[in-house]
Image (cartoon, rainbow over all chains, first blue to last red):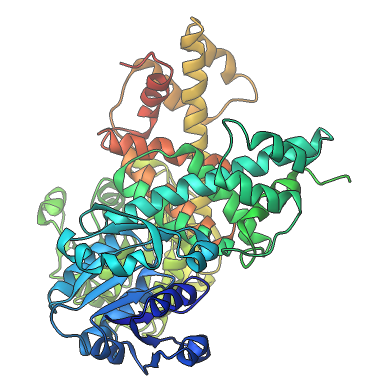
Length: 292
Length: 292
């Protein structure tokens, strides 16, 4: 299939590479063209704009930061709709607000372009291993058409519901994951304050009811005090801004998530936004400095 | 003085009436014409749009719901900026984000129009009795020009600092008010669930460190189950949205405000949005299993 990919960052680059490896003809665009170099060297066509990508591809993936970025790619001066043929499919794997996804999908439909919101979970490792969890919102027939493509970047592909539903699922994912990181950080803080080794506690817990992928991965990073980024914490901070705005609009109370959001604010204040979210442990330590 | 007034709702109407009573000539515009009924026969001039208000008046006071409304009145079609009145002073008593106030102030300054952010505290009662607290940000000379008008609508009038500083003070005010409201609701529910007379507890506390105007007035109404709205729950939710959105951008953890904001989300979501914000006690009771 002729596939386009826009947004070749930490997540986008390995996802695009996996699509190329599956034998699809790739056309790519990145704001910083050096981000596209490894893919171009592997045979992908380099486009000068999203419009050019749309001319070259039947299905276009986007993996960018914010709803405004997706909007710009779709409808900007050299946006997708300038080059798209009717029936083109946009698969947006960015994490954006559900209402943004719905609005963009409706506007694209006016140009005959189908859109799926298909945010992912699994981090850069999941992107490299093609083991991402993909949460899809949009029409089932459209998903059926692109499912083989999704199968070459992810392992779990779930059609959650109509347009926007994928982003709702992603918001739920972020709430559980980051709240769990905070819980692990607090457990590590308690262990250390008690004079008990964090790595042993983590090891002991990983066989029991508290076992989780977050405990495995982020717990290990905290125990080793390795705070460098897997996924940058500023992106989780951004996601929490989005989902807490949703909570206001919906009139739902999210007591724990609201507190975790505040911890993320503090993380940003300390300039750790470019590092890993395991820095939530260091935020706690600002209230109770380590003595050892 | 020739005074323009835009936004004649729960707060704006009594504020404008007090200015009229003081002998100022009013120039009014309202989106909903029925809001003008209270001014029939008062000699107030009814304008076609905000631009006309701006052409007739030396000072224009705004009191609307949210930033998009202020933006519309100031910068939208038929708005104040279109009047081209250099030297005009606009004083905005709406509660909006500090960043939004600064942005609108800059845009109006390009047209030679001074903008003061002048949010108020004191509710409908304060507006009616001319006992409001004004927190003002913006140019000091413009503030001095408007001060006599503030004195006709309020009792405590403070020039807090540069543009946006008034809204910062208002956000601080809402943090204290909302958390105190929740604190009083929790304390009275604690008493109730313990089988102790809340009225006696309140009386005992009024003499000590827990004294506050909220314990005195709102505590009394909570005990009387008098939910007649002064400041509605949805307004509190909106103000806390501004607080937490600003905290998100500042990198500032506000654990208390974040927790209380969830209670107001739940109020709006459960259909209590039109009740006074002190009805938050109903949710505290519901959580305690002693709700209505």
